[in-house]
Image (tube, rainbow, N blue to C red; front, side):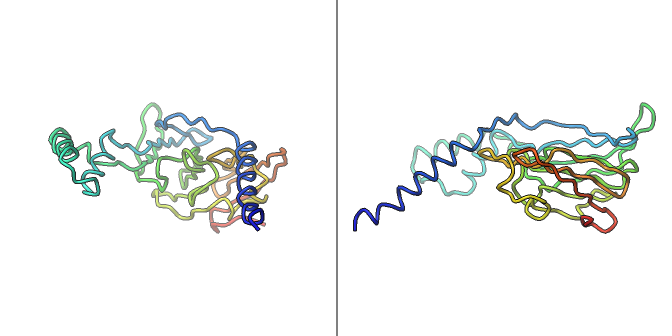
Length: 220
């Protein structure tokens, strides 16, 4: 009877070991400001990752008052709170700026926050500046609700997708790491109203899908 009760535990341990052996390790650099251009170089997109002060999370922790109410902690809290600035209490979201290029000059068309918590991994820009598309979330490629997002000519999010909503392959077919699924081989505008996305499985099979920006859906 005891052996039957212990069997599921052994199975779970074995499964965990197999997953850890097959999942690849991740190495992510700190996010940085990135610039993307339309293919005709007439539009420039600058994406600035979320900016958070090093002191923000400790400030937020102390502000919540959920910390132990000991004298030692309260003294540390009082000293900390006396030595922070207003900037330490602000968390600036990921922001995108779209510019129209005019020779050596550029004209700002819009500046808006993006939906990503940190920043997207990649972005593309239409040749007429009528839309941009972002792909994946920094630190977690293939996961989350913002794997593929379309923004319109004013920088407003029009449509957002999870990977399972757009993939031609089962999710288990993609190369996997501890934090990510690697699904995208290529993504580009093929004209101002269509984006071609190339999906690639772990065994190097590829599949192309065309996204129609007028209909805000994939073509069959």
